[in-house]
Image 1: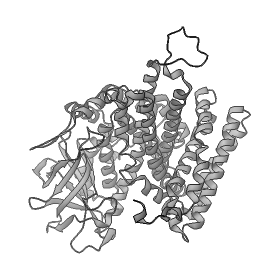
Image 2 (image 1 turned 180 degrees about the vertical axis):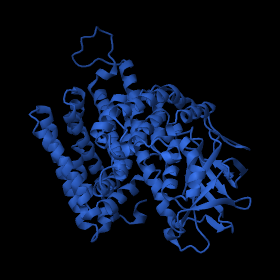
Image 3 (image 1 turned 60 degrees about the vertical axis):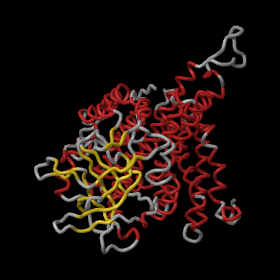
Image 4 (image 1 turned 180 degrees about the horizontal axis):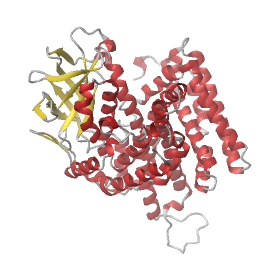
Length: 589
């Protein structure tokens, strides 16, 4: 498998389309410039293409081993991780106070796209560590930050997120893990957690687990959950590693994909209790964990972009090489065959992959830029507006982009034909790896519920309305461009926004009086929102770089082939729940 990061497209989308350049040279990013951003991306591209991409297939075939000393990954993966650490890649967006470089979150997100496109099994580890860094930075004590952040930021130690338990999937009300005060400021943690990504491995010398558990007197439900820091090895006052903690991987999940990434069943306290320390306030663990989860949701969306890009490059290379059939009107000699990329339907599939990938990339980067604006841009009102934009776009970035990842990987298999179903071509691995993305870090159904019930009502709907108005301005600029292609593209975007407006009106009007009707249409609504937003960013790209005929062609194809899908989704988004419950449970079969 070969992967080459599209450096120029990534930098242009990040700096110009998503708007990072507007934050540069002032505030927290006074020393950041477009040239710096592009140089960082170029340097990261070398690691992604030359070191990480060759791991993808081999790590998938090698799998993982759980022995007496813990989990062993594909050996070359551990070597690559050390190169990643030596390059300082984990410290990009972290606070300089603890060894970070203080660069924009958006730049770190772009780098995560590269790591995951090259080898998603590898890229998962930095994602979890970055989330742990976010949570500790926001909610940890000064002592916790001093002891753990420098090593997490450098990448010498890695982090995990421990939510799910065997009896509790997405319903955190059912969590049973316990935390009992130990009398010295620490707690003894007992319980079992499942689906823990990189819960154990041999790539780093220590692992910092963030674990949700209940105190003895905790109230029921999510109001009684606290967050605890539980290291694999206890850390001495001088920073050296002490004794092994009572936290062990007792099983590895046998998964559909990401075979090179350990997904662990973790047991805490089988030998008396795992020592942990409270993060934040008692019974406020969910609020602390959401700091980590919101970060992870954007990065999972970025994984969707990554797998779509990798699958596209793979399919494109195959379509250029594979010869079969003769296009209509071909001048080939009798018996000669053309590369399948010359067939209109194959070209349609490839373009669908490309434009959806670029749309999802722009949404994810724009979400990250909004996060940067919330932390380091302008006055308080500007920062508040940026945070609201980030809140609105996060479920869209996660859900829309991961759906695109699965769809693009599926199209990639289709382009390979029968060989796509055979493992040796590598197309199937992208599909297997992509399928987890709409599930973890909150299923895409949960993201749709979050968008409709929590994010649309922000500011009485003004946050969403403001974004739609911004998209209208893009459509207006395209229609006024005196360019035939862009005029048509702007009209198509306007029509899509008419549909989004209707669906948004329905959701806001019925959310309180008929919530189940809104929930029934939440997923179609999110797809309408994401599709329109993707069109907005692609049209913006075409307007900003009119000399690039490729950007105009991408916007044109998206307007003709992807944007019209929103009109068919309006009915499902606003149909209510009556048809969902027309059949009784026993009539479903």
